Length: 302
Ligand SMILES: [Zn+2]
Image 1 (cartoon, rainbow, N blue to C red):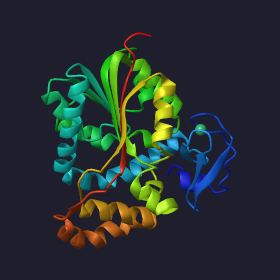
Image 2 (cartoon, protein in one colour; image 1 turned 90 degrees about the vertical axis):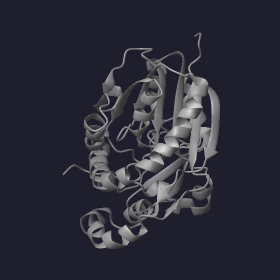
Image 3 (cartoon, rainbow, N blue to C red; image 1 turned 30 degrees about the horizontal axis):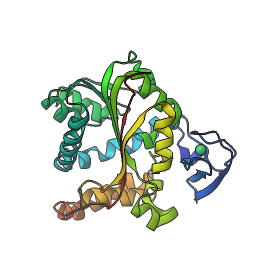
Image 4 (tube, rainbow, N blue to C red; image 1 turned 45 degrees about the vertical axis):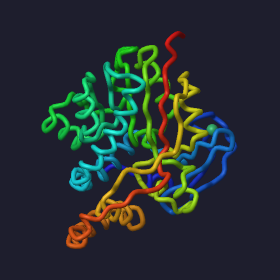
């Protein structure tokens, strides 16, 4: 089995510079046995220290995404309701064209975008949701990282990243690549957990955003603006929105995963908790002021 960040960041050093602005001036936000998160004093980016390698992140992703895929599919309706609202927004900025969804998961957004006439393609690091998108929804989805995708420059009119950039250890390189692959005037739509959101502020270092082992970068409005403007984008919209509707089953799954031993829970917890999960399957809640929501545009003229 591959190394995970938990096994490789034992000393909790924060000597490396900020992945966004390079500043060495940072303060510790979270320090537990498993994870150390530091906030850059200059740009506000919060990030794991040290940052795991891409190989480690893919191994973590495989371990966590695959066991939860069934629960994710059970939330299809609430995902689709959320993406309908996002498409309503998107159509105000770019009503048609070539669209890439980075971190597309099972393809619910792409499926809906295709219905509205966009020419869609998707990309995901994880093979299980990608296979669902391809085999069940018949979408053009590639497994791999954005940097291996090697899109021609200016190939897309719209690129979307829903709950994806928090998985990204190199936000500057990501911003540059997104800018390169968009055509002039192209639209970028991004959502990510808000490190400056209501729940994050109330919970402090115990915020579950920090517990998700797949997440390595934690953005506020300040640091997300830094990423987008630093790459050359014009900000069209940058706000904090409520989370989408979640079933209690999904929420319990994630909370137990975050606050108890990850591997033990995956092997024992799901089986033990299944009857309770079934009873809670009908209940739902949403997280207030939970996510950053940004729309940005590549300038039409350089
Ligand atoms: Zn910084």
